[in-house]
Length: 473
Length: 165
Ligand SMILES: Cc1cc2nc3c(=O)[nH]c(=O)nc-3n(C[C@H](O)[C@H](O)[C@H](O)COP(=O)(O)OP(=O)(O)OC[C@H]3O[C@@H](n4cnc5c(N)ncnc54)[C@H](O)[C@@H]3O)c2cc1C
Ligand code: SF4
Ligand code: SF4
Ligand code: FES
Image (cartoon, rainbow over all chains, first blue to last red; front, side):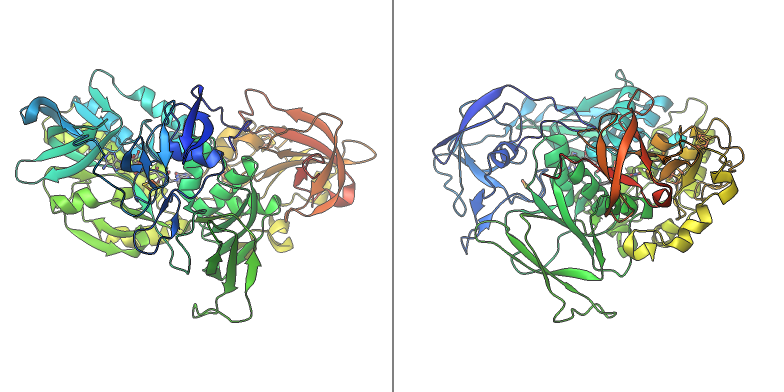
């Protein structure tokens, strides 16, 4: 179902078009992801797994996980969570690996025949709060920037956040995430920053310092003097029987579906994880008119802010701490989840099982830095659970152990948009300065950013964060 | 307990409730914010400077009930949606509560709705006195409702009747 009325969002939709799914005629909006259109038509099984023929739906909704591969206009292995709907498209459930023999030979063409390497002072990878702030600050110092994002809209996580943010006025507190994205995008110096959307950075070639980029099915190369990696984070998964059933989604994926594409993920939801993401997405599901049956949390305490927890409690949503998922059930897609209680040693207690009839389960058990490019570049990484997993070592200027490669935001340790923005500014300033750019205010702005970060991280809710960061710098 | 349930205990609440004498004098803000988090828009929202300046952004809000006039400007500025106005002097028949409500459909003035407590349980019914949903509220509408005095420290949300069918 498409969301008709929303208390915060207005959805801009394309015209209504017809398409075909396994021979059946359906309606969708032009330009929305195929998976969203299918979902709105009640189709959640998108393909069959390779060996066991199990039903598969989508999981990440941002082109990361390959759970949603389908046959589109004869071509197999199309990620329908990002591929846009066109009039008359023929979409089919994909069996196993799909048949490549009838597909187009080479859909990705190389622009400029390899000779056209674009040059830029600083390449910023990722257009979330960190990347946007990095570009703004680097421009301010006088450096030219190429800002790349694989999404069709700039703003990263912000474009899905309908709630007012925390922080202080400087970090846009009480402004909604979606509005912060617009404010930052407006601040970009259009002369100094070249924005490339639908542009995925596929790889970094260490030998010649070149980035390989796929932009709208074209392959391009960029050779920057400095690189700021601000790719954000990806959602962790949880192991339990039948965790591959369609209807089990990352909480961020459910959020993308409802807040970016205006499609409800289902009717009754179980949220797994009572951190800020689990709590906020639960609230947003209720705002979209979807019933949240319960929030469960394996730890004995709520991890997110208590004000967020109180918000969902006031709506009548129960929170079960010390509970985890025992199993999921359903024939073609999710129909029921069994949860059970954990004792002090995190061992499940027999006899405490509760069955919940839900068609959607959202997994919000944390994020881990999206650091593939940093691994490729040979940056030294360290496993720090408090920061979400493998995190790059870096100096106070946000430079990694590889000279010329900087990091900012969730990829440098999963935290908040507020700190991501300040880290981004810091990285932008320092990368520009290392190229000799300075508008005369470098020292002052750098100091300001460092102090702001210290201030943000000084509270008790940042204790783990502080401990983690000590190991990195 | 709030760290396990998301619902403040009476002990938590005692710490933030205004004294009885103040409640009897007229509208006043009740700030149900119990955890040190990096957040301070309530301070910047209050033009009367009833909320003390934060030394550290993680401080809990400190309100001077004698300065606060219950204007309610802070309600829609709090990302935690945890500020409520209680006016025990509003009328003979009931106490006025102002609360944030970010859902559709919005209730209409005069509409009868369910009154919910901090656990989302229905504890009575109430009448909507006013709906503020202008530029200032910026999509966090403020709803004024009338409840019996004994429920004035308990009711913190509403649910529309038509949603229930
Ligand atoms: C539900 C939820 C609620 C939140 N609430 C708050 C809050 O109230 N306050 C707060 O401060 N923070 C909040 N956050 C956290 C905040 O959104 C993140 O910390 C912040 O967005 C991180 O910024 P970033 O720029 O590092 O990454 P992101 O915002 O994730 O941006 C990364 C960008 O990089 C792009 N990208 C990734 N890989 C590539 C590639 N290879 N090529 C090209 N582009 C790529 C992605 O498309 C994306 O746009 C919330 C997060 C969630 C999920
Ligand atoms: S109700 Fe008005 S005076 Fe009282 S704290 Fe809020 S903004 Fe200030
Ligand atoms: S704005 Fe709200 S959540 Fe933030 S500190 Fe003030 S009362 Fe607490
Ligand atoms: S790649 Fe489409 S759902 Fe993950």
